[in-house]
Picture 1 (cartoon, rainbow, N blue to C red):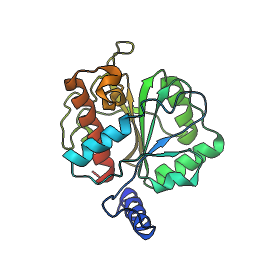
Picture 2: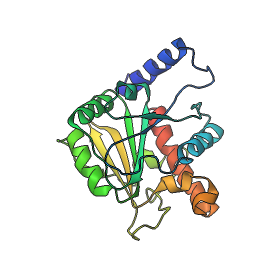
Picture 3: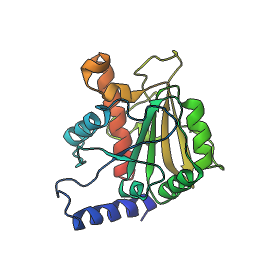
Picture 4: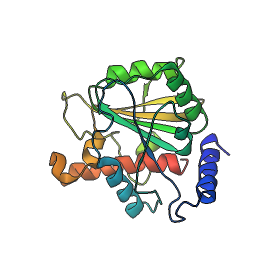
Length: 221
């Protein structure tokens, strides 16, 4: 049994004990961080992604996202934590240590660079894993080939600086513990269509890529 599977089974048993609605197997969270990097942007993104996954993948994810702070013990209640924003992000030493324990214990961190986060993400995740470097995932990686196939890796949804999209990962003892999409902003495509007026084709690509990430995490593939 993998560490992630153990965490998911534990979370399910705790939620059942506490009287959570039996129709929901999982609940996921957005991270509230310090630094002024707008952790709260794209408020419709996760609810829309959850709805897409429940409808198309048969998942049973609670439609209401939680909000957690990196230093809180509450992060251990969620198998999947999402970070997004614009610009600066700061972890204290205690927060970095707590986040490390969460990821080593089977949790997963998804980072969506809404814009301008790259140098901050890399610096702060070094506090969490000083011994690791972000590596670009090959297009053959399973995260790109769950229910939906992305033969060219993470799709580009928002232009930003016109650079090619890249999907990076932190890998601990052979396990992907963090996925970071750079110059792609797939979270942009998860939002309500009237927010960014993205074409439906782009929104579908974004939702399908997001569904792949969630399925990869929750189903342990």
